[in-house]
Amino acid sequence: MSVAASEYTAARLSRARLGVTLLFVTNGLIWSNLAPRYPEIRRGLELTYGQFGTAVMFGGIGAMVVGLSAAAIIRRYRSARVAVVTMVFMAAGLVLAALAPNGVLFAAALFAVGAIDSIVDVAQNSHGLRVQREMKRSIINSLHAMWSIGAVLGGLMGAAAAGLDIPVPTHFTIVFVLVLAINIVAYRMLLPGADPVPEATAASGGGSLRAVSVRVWLILASLAVVAIAGGWVEDAGGTWSANYLHDSLGAAASLAAMGFVALMTMQTIGRLIGDRLVDRFGQRTVARAGGLLVIVGMGSALLWPSIPLTIVGFGLAGLGVATTIPAAMHEADELPGFRAGTGLTILSWTLRLGFLLSPVLVGLIADEVSLRVGLTLVVVAGVLIVVFAQALSQRPRSRALDVETPEPHPAP
Image (cartoon, rainbow, N blue to C red; front, top):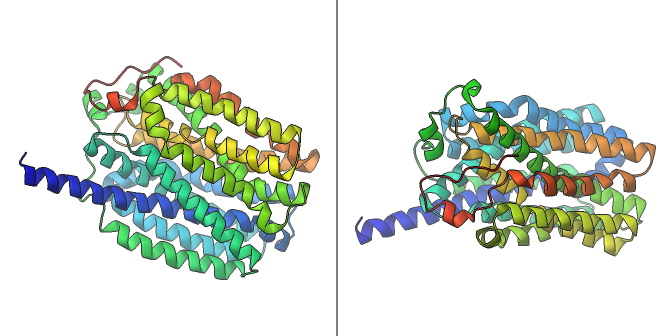
C-alpha cells in the first residue's frame, strides 16, 4: 500500500472511530437523562417502589421481545444505518415516557424504548467492532468509555433539570433534538457499505445454531452471566441510586443524582484505561479484580449507610464493572460457529435479562424489607463476575489482534 493510500485509510478509520464514538455518547446520554428524573416521575404517577420497578422492567421486556431480531436487521440494512435511525427513535420514545399520564402508559413507553435500544446496542457495537478490526487494535473499551461519558453528561443534565424544576417533557424534548443533531453528523463519518464477516466467524462457516458445539454454547452462557452481572450494577445506579439516597438517606434531589454520576464517572475512567489494563493483565484478571471492587465498595456502603460512603460505593462499583460488558461482547462476537453478529446479538439479548429482572427484584425486596437490602443484589453481581470471569480470554487483547488464529477459550 502506498504512503498516500495508507494515510487515506488511517484518516478514514479515524473519522469512522469519531462517528461511532458519537453513537456511543448519545446512547449513554438518552438513558441517563431519565435516571435522575425517576423519583419525580414515580411520585407524579403515584407508584409504589414495586409498581415503579415493574414499570421499569417493561423496558427489559421490550428488549427481550425484539432483541434477537437485531442481527438479521443489521445484516440487511447495515450497522451504521440501523444504529443512527434507531437511536433517533429511541430518543423520541423518551419524550413519550415523559408525557405518560399513568403507570401503564409509562411502562408501555419504556417497553418501546427498551425494544429500540436492544437494536441500537447491537448495531453500535457491531460497527465499533468493525472499526476495531480494520484498525487492528483494541478500541472497544474506549468506545464504551464514551458511552459512560455520555451517561455522566446525561446524569448531570438530568440533575440540573431536576434542580431547576424544568418540566420533564420539556427536558426530554431538548434531549431528542440534541440526539437528532449529533446522529446526523455521526452518520456521515461511519464506514460505508455492507458489514464484512469477522474472520473467526467466516472460517467456522457460520451455519445453523444447532451446529454450534456444546462447549461454545457454555462459553457464551458464561459470558452472558458476566454481562448480566455488569448490567445489574449499572441498573442499580440508574434505577435505584437516586431513590435510595433521597428516600432512605435524606439527600436533596440534586445530591441524590450523584450516586449515578459517581458510578458513571468511575466506569468511564475504568474504560479509558481498560484497554491498557487488559493488554497487560488479560481480560480475566481485570474482570475478577473489578468484581472484588464491586463487593468491597457496595458491601461497605450498605453495611455502614451514609450519603458520602454510598456515593463512593456506587463509584467503586462503576469502576469494577468498567470492562466486563465490553469484554463479554468482544468475546461473543468472535465465537466460532455463529453467523455474523449472532453471538453478539444473543449476548446482548441475555444481557437484557439483567435489566428485566433487576428492577422488579430490587423493588419487591424494597417493598417487603428495605431498599438497602434490595441493593445487596449489587454485591451478588460482584460475586458472579469473580466466578464466571473464567470464560474470558486471559491473553492480552493487543496480541490477540495481531494473529490470525484466535486463542481457544477456556472451559467455563
